[in-house]
Length: 99
View (cartoon, rainbow, N blue to C red):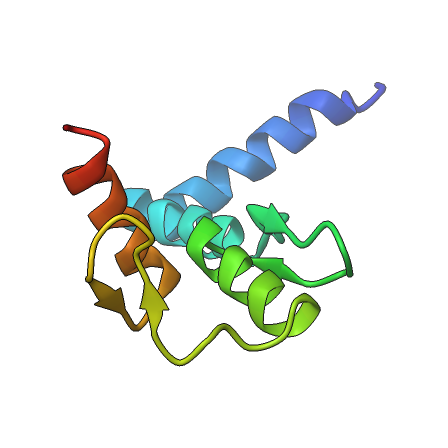
């Protein structure tokens, strides 16, 4: 009598499911999901650096590839100054683009 390997594998899988239980299977699935490598979301166009956020990427490009930004960024349309480019962009959008 021939042994059906598919049936044998299915029986082994069901036995493993009974051993782990539903909670164990969920935890096993989460562990496997956490271990699967994922590509970074943002890449620097000038080097191989990768970042999780767009803001980190922009900061890297400005700091590494274009030198340090000036100590204070001045708005060319008013007297406001900012410590970061992100603050300046927010100001510009909220104050000057709404006019």
